Structure formats: structure tokens, C-alpha cells
Length: 280
Image (cartoon, rainbow, N blue to C red; front, side, top):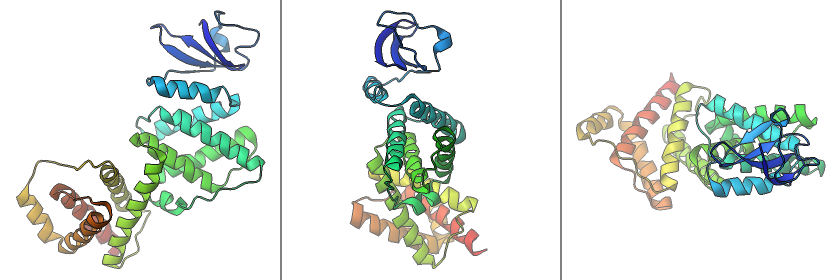
């Protein structure tokens, strides 16, 4: 590997076999070296290849300012998250999570704790991401001897939700708010308290997540229309159908979003299942 650019003592930019830039990390990898020098493979700890050029440049800028240990923990968390979630994460997670972990550690040094007012909802709606958030806190404690508060596990979870949907963090807050609003409508319509550990609530939450994502991005869901099936579902789950109409009215009034017939049908099914299971 030939050094093309030095970001700091532990991070350099080299070219891969296809002459594409890659970010190479290793303790002291740039010590007493200059552009054009060779980097031995045995000194390389991690290599990043980010497809988006703008994201790569931002990541390079960030890496130039952060300790190697923060980058290593962030990379460990991301690798664990990809395995645990079983899906791709947008490259922006390298920027958002690394920066967040560094900021959280700096806040702890200064004795500053930031409350996560969405923590309860994050636990309910994004249990997998929240589990990973807690795992990240364990990794941080092992590496730095610092116990970050549970609120930070929630913030990390939001970054992961974000990266899985290719959206900005601000939208994830809005997404969680919509999920809470819809859940409250269901809860008050049926006068129930959900068993949030049930697989049906998990499926309901997953459906709401992607439904809310479409709403925020003005992307209606359209499947092959089946009016006959819709009528059957409507009659079979009349109370759930009435509840979905309340949701539709609320979303139209507050978000100017019109639920399609297909979306109504799937909401009816999920609501009927989660409510029925809750009353068993």
C-alpha cells in the first residue's frame, strides 16, 4: 500500500487494486512516513472502502480529529450490528456513530448527561437496535472503562435505524413520534395495554416503522388491488377496520397523508392480531 494522504498518525489514504481510495488504519501507521511511502500489511488494522465519495470525504475529515480507540469501537459496533440485524447499513453510519461515541465520551468527561426523551419508545419499537445499543455500551466500557448511561444506548439505536433506512436522524425522531401516535390510537380504541414482549407486537411495530417511513417520504404502498379480499378483511375484523379509519383521519388531518386501501388492509390485519393476542 502506497500512502496518498496522511490524516493523522494512525490513519492514511491509499489506493486499492482498482485505484480507488481506501481509508487505512493502524497504530502509528504514518509515524515517520510521508506521501509515497509504502505501508506494510502487518501494520494495518482496518480498511474502509466507502462507495459514496462525499461520505468518504466527511469520514476522512472526522477521522483526522478522533482517537484511534474511538474509531475501533465504532467499527466493532457496526460489524456487530450488521451481523445481528442481518441487513446492510448505509455508509453514513461510520460518520454518525463514530462522531456520536466520541461526543458521548467527551460529555462524560465533563459530567454532562443528555436525556433521551424517546428512550421508552425506542425500547418498544426498535428492540433489536436497542439491544445493539446496550452492546455498544459494553464495548465502550471494556475499551475506556467508562459506563455510558442507558440513554446513549437509545441514541445509538436511532443511528442504526437511520442507517437502515438511509434517512437523517431528525426523521427518525419524527418516525418514532408517528409510531407512538398510531399505537396510542389503537390502545385507546380497544382500551388495552399491549404485551410488548410478544412476537405480534414486534411484527406490528416493524410494520409501523416502514409504514411511517413511507409516510414521511410521501411514498404510498401499492400492491395488486384485491377489492374482494379487502371486503372480507373489513368484515372479519370490523373493530380493527374502525380503528384504522380513526388512524386514517388522524394522519390526513395532521400529516396530509392518505392511506391507500392496501395499507389499510395490512394495518387492519396487524392490529387485529396484536389486539387479539393481547386479550388471550
